[in-house]
Length: 535
Image 1 (tube, rainbow, N blue to C red):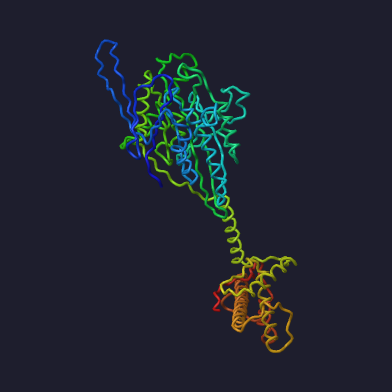
Image 2: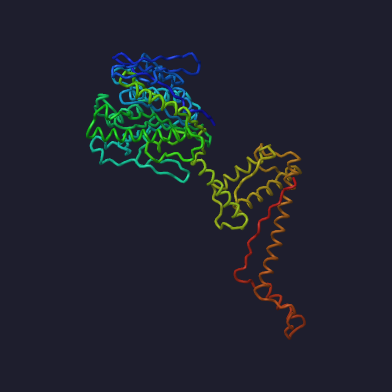
């Protein structure tokens, strides 16, 4: 189990206009600080008593010149490594519209070096899977879009030919253990990096994008790209299953500032409402004495339940556009990140037993129990052993005799036909060996079956024990037969008067009737005995 708080990072978006006044300090080894200075504006003719400086702490702060590769190495690569070992991981970007969230998560299409976290993570994961030949890996991809608080599968092939309203909606289902399952969300297999990237491009093509005053290509929905990985060592019954959520949240915006209307206004309302519910969940998790966390308020928080305060290693990227007109939104984003940093997750290694191997083991156990029941009840098989069965049984007996290991066991199952054949085989072998030792004609036997004197003694003791067991079985069968006869004829305690005739004739006739009469339904089956051999 790994206990750690959510890791938070900040990235400043490059700007063509003169940026707002800010400074980044990396004096500490494991943390950096971002200071935002609000310029005073005295044009309104009154004194401004607002704070001039805001300071925030992050694991690392990336300035405007930071490349995409450095973002991946610092943020995404450690999470991807933990996912390959069996832990769940989540990376999500948060910020206002136009601050660079989609560019950070997905990347740009103009240059190959502009690839974002998702394509670089796919490339790294499949590279590691090909290097590791000690395990068998399988990977699946899912791509969920949450638009106006409704879920849609971005990998559904009907996206291009149907309207969004006509597509089946992804719904949330919860099992008794409070695990979340998404209905109508497909899992697409991906054996190579190329197949995974094709699925990513297909989902991005189907995503809702619109032009707003803040961004020419603003994403109007939350998207969760998930990589499911399972690994198993050959011959092992343990399977490790992990998942990596790469989340691109839609950006918040102030409607009064952007002035959107119509469909864009409706989309902005749903986006801001879902982000508000996300902030409520963050605040509830940060409070120690809070018993209820409102995960069910929105679909996004329900899907990310494990990522926020659950079994997951989570990382957040706060994207900032520190222009003069966006300083208030940037400060709000940094404050949200500070609250997220207070949440502690407990990541557990996701190991489980392969259900297919469990089924095979249970089938073997059921067959062994059935054989034991047959042996106890003494159920007989009427058909004779086939020539193939006899040949295999002969080979098994010869291998058992040739084995010098004293702990070896001869297993022929609960078939009494095979058990009797083994007894007969050992008896013939004993007599043949005895006549060979006394100077008689030696039967044809493989050279490997010659037994030493101690083995001969062991075989004699075993044969004598089996003869004793057979005699006991015969005696018990006779007693059972007489008991059944007595129960059927209800023999009185006082013997009847003998029939008039020659002396002793009546008694002999009665004894003859008792000897020859067999009650219907009498059970004459032998009862198997289990005795531990003394040899």
